Length: 159
Image (cartoon, rainbow, N blue to C red; front, side, top):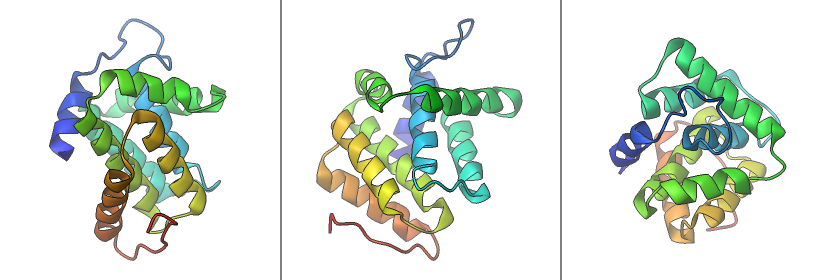
């Protein structure tokens, strides 16, 4: 399923030639991933590296193009008043399986530092609700990400 979402994300319009904005699905995805990375108020280097790695792998980009997308996501998140602008874009552009896989990417970033903070958990829950990912799918994605993260700790109220 991860490969399917990567394939889908690569095919999303890039907004080339136009200023990147929250209506661009790539910027919306980047902004949500950036948002969950900062949900606990602490941006660790390992989280930033995983964020950029996910973007690079998702869109087959690197270098200046990757830096520009990461910066566009950061800028969009900082300017946003809520998550709906981003989630509505993804809900329109991703099918159900790709939305589940996107939640899995969010969990990967959450667990990049090996810990689950309640604000990160809440952010993923809110995004999942807004894009139509069922509770059991969100929990399963969290379990997979936690199992893949060495030394991961923390649980949420979902269990």
